[in-house]
Image 1 (spheres, rainbow over the protein chains, first blue to last red):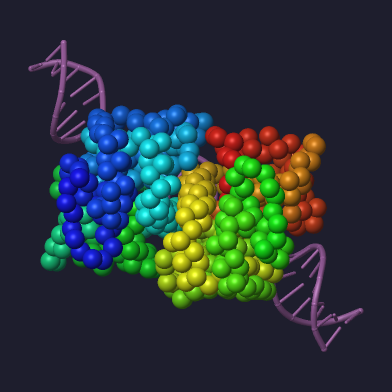
Image 2: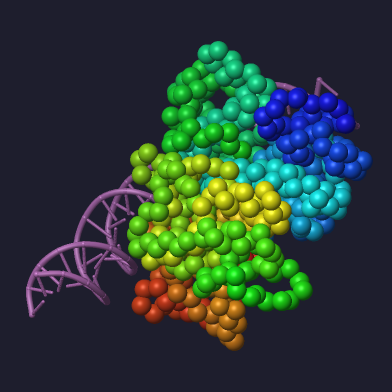
Length: 251
Length: 251
DNA sequence: AACTAACCTTGACCTAGATCAACCGATGTC
DNA sequence: GACATCGGTTGATCTAGGTCAAGGTTAGTT
């Protein structure tokens, strides 16, 4: 296992083996011997954009972290209505220890690499290495908070507020990943199609398109191409998002 | 500490001291000595219907379980729009270890009794008694699943489906609490006002009222008084709820 | 018994967002 | 070079649910 930061404070990310990214999931103290056992069962999986990784109800015998690319968790109703319930960016964790089958469709929306562990050994580690479980609890609580912010968005925000919120959420995640604090303006590349955005926001893709156009017309955002977005005034965007709290790092 | 069931399989509820209900939160092996330490810090709190227990942003120095009554977690926007993000029925756990302040308003919607532990000692127990943390992780994952089901409801269901879903959710929780399997029909007492339902469902209270009337008119439910509901055919209700999976025990 | 205050219902009307449909531009391929 | 295909935009129209307003029922108070 590779060396990691030696900062005395709790790490929230961990460099792990030859992974190009830091796993938030694995462990908060990477020098722990226990984790060598995990390391042995680690492997990678690659998926193409559009590929479904697991279908809801399928057996899922692994857990893992997103290394690169974007995946989504989506629920589908019989008549085809779809609601995204999870957006997985690099370093996010997938999979539920203690459950045999997937509860949602897991879809790679871009080309995707995941770093996986077989579920059984991972569960064993969790039992014998308390801080892995503690870290996972912490992450799950964060996800629950994000889900609840998302519920406010779905239940009470207008279409315009929803779009502004989504752009802000992705911009914040992006910024926190890149550790980049651009001076005045913020720049984001939306990693989602209009359709995926509509599934995130509980809207139709036409409404998404219209509201993005409206925000552009009103100078809240500038657009280059289809996906590249410049936010000249981030506070203005937050205002448009109707956010009460400043939201922390959602998703 | 009182004696509990001695079934060899994992318990999901635990009778705890003189608590009138079983704590789902505390522990899956109640004969554990560690818990005596917890027991010492246990205390009760009572609230009246309508009382706010903590405001979002307030310091929250305890965790606990609902003993009797109903509490809700609610998010509020500056302009007063409100979205419920958690519904706490008896045996549900409140509070987030590792966080100082509440992220949501916690409101007693009926007279309420909670069984509480001061947060600090509870956190200590979590560190030294792994299965308490494991149990809490399990519960948090269940809550996350419920939140995601709720997101589908908020984002994609019609008003009628939302109402049917809510009634089904409460009926299931009720039934599981009472362990009562009534033969043909199912009976529920809605513990929520029309307004609280509207905050749960992302609707206005007028729409809630109208859709309940419509379901009554169509024979899906029968109503006595305002809150007492008889479901002559539960499968019919589930159909109206548009549920794909049969949903397990949500909330 | 009259009065008040919650809580709930119903009606009339309006609007945000859905639906249906046409079209645009880039990319790939035969 | 013709022509799909995919992702996106925009327009015209429709409708589910919101808004505003009136009234009804029940329980508690004086």
